[in-house]
Length: 559
Image 1: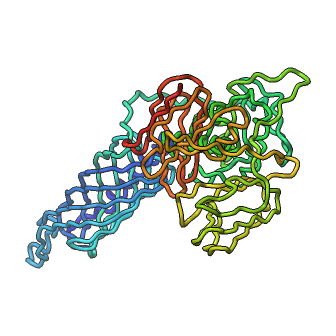
Image 2: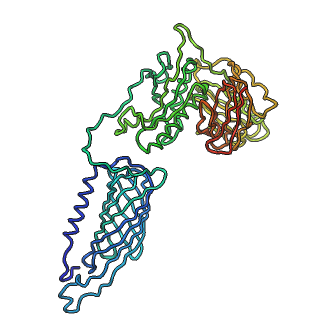
Image 3: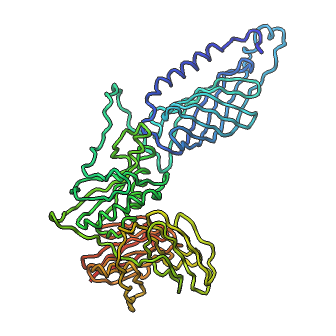
């Protein structure tokens, strides 16, 4: 309701608000310059153009915001607000003052707290703000804001908001400093003099590799044309979203890669992981490193010695396509094999695969707290039967897949394997039972020999020698196994001759551990049931430990 003698400030408000919007819109093209997720604390001063009906001077106050920008496009805040409006006799008007009929107006204080949302339409500094508060009266705000000086460093924040409380509609301006905190926040860059934007540069694209995989699915892979420095993009090797877990479709290609590497024992590789540009640099680098180690562990489980492989993550630093399109980002999320060493055989000679020959068959006996055999090769379509010959119930649980019911003594459980791949499993009741594997291959790829029996364990030490060690011994090397149980390496110290391959086997029920600080390689995170191997050729003492748990330590003594 208007009062006689009260000046109208609507045009002034509209002009100021329009000017603020125009100034912020002018800065919109600057949005997106290195935006990262972060938490922040923002104190602000407030000036409010009072509603004419308040009969008060304009208001002053402040806002304190504690929030999180959890994506480039969205953030949430907890806000506290205070405004004070001083009564103004002149606002009541001359006529009603002379007649003594003006309403009595007191000073007004408004305080409250509540929650709000910030929407960043351009993933940069410009944002739309809304909030709702409770306090002296219910209060609501809506409008626009802008962060000057960088969206992830300390910045100047300006807001132009519509403020509604009771029956009054005010226009509120906030100005303050935003202080980011947390691991992802970065210091604000030094201000630079304005320079006209340079002409856009073409997207840097890595040249396509000379050494490529065959285009057809299921075709054998031949590394005959690969030389040192060649890079092979593993098209078809994919991961679960935001994880380093290989999808089932990836194992078919990796099995063919294993066969090709076994046929070329002279080749050494670096497994390289890459991501698109979504997310922070540090997060992408860590994710790509975990994915590269996941591929390396699969190749290692397929029989490729760890001394022929390393793994490294490059994050988003080496794109092969434009990150501004979904198709380009999908191409950039990839795994590669880089040929770090190669000494190809002379023309006319061939090298037979060095894969250790496993036990063949279609039945596993559960006896004496173990799956016998520990490793079983079958062809696609084979039904494998687990026969429980113990005096207690057992279960068969596949990692990331199905699990059996409880198998009573004398009963059995069966499962059909239709697809080529490696299926690791363990007992859900007795975690001390070692992880076993079903390996499904086509008949023409199936090894024919049986492995040599496992040698007796060294009486002087508490370590075990399993089927992996027996296979290594048959192929001319020696193998030793260190179990990872709870928070310990068992045994903590082993003594081996030069040339021995040591395998660290994480218990199926264990939490993740690492084997670190060894020369020539690191295990990365070993999931429950996973293993890591390294060959020690040089005499010496090699202490190691776990990156996750500093109290864990072990030593390999090579004589």
